Length: 387
Image 1 (cartoon, rainbow, N blue to C red):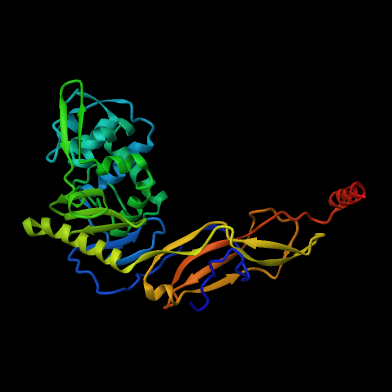
Image 2: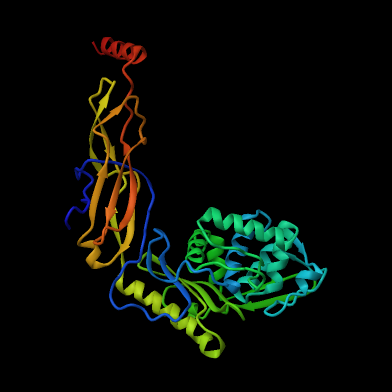
């Protein structure tokens, strides 16, 4: 495999590694291109963040109720899940789709998340937003800030439920990044994959059913969220897992009317099929793999061993696996003192077209003390004790 990094823990090459830090640019090409009618779309592998296919992925588009992915995430991270929410007249007045909340009704915050995510209840989303932030506007500011922290670059939430207002929009790429982060939350996974749920307030009992057809129609489906408005058209963010690989598909603007409603499911399945048929997870390096010895200056020890700190796994096609190249960047000499785990260099993996598939740091495998009065004294004491 050319200059492919050997899997052996004793494979020698100049370098060593700390934080796994994937930098994946462009789109991997494999097999027959998927047929996708959506205005904006992306297929991403969740763990690595590698983009396997895209179409206008960075285009700003209204994203309808896929917005509720972020609303749910903020709620789960708020620490307020056991709070009792008093529904405001504003929240109760939100249009269809709604769970039917009434002004003054009291319900646990966590119990609002199931109607919001399974049936896309707009009143539930606003009730959540107002309770957490005091107003929907302040909550949207929280959403924007959190999205930016996660890695979104062109997202502006102006409603908590995704209804069209002002410049409310996101991109297929941003929604994939947000969803990849959200899927790390087990409570989020539990909610989006629930086939149904029953919750109760101080006034009534609500039973909701999951509207996500992917859960019933696609092997390995996890969820995530449907969406539709007059401006956005049919939208869907989906996720599925097979053989340990989780793929996220995003389609924004798959169409309008009955044909558009069906098209979002076709677009999604075409994307996921493309990913699972052409890519497999491949381990490029194991944590603890030996890299090399690097010279040390200013110490009694001449060298320090370096190693890979974290397992590097990314999705690849067969062709990519056969042609990966590596580039190791470490200095010829390092000054003491050196701490175990200290970054000393970088390892990069390249695809056939020169695209950087992954980057990871190279670290010192042990401590090396500086040659000074204290270390000299300790060395002499150790010498005499051993005698």
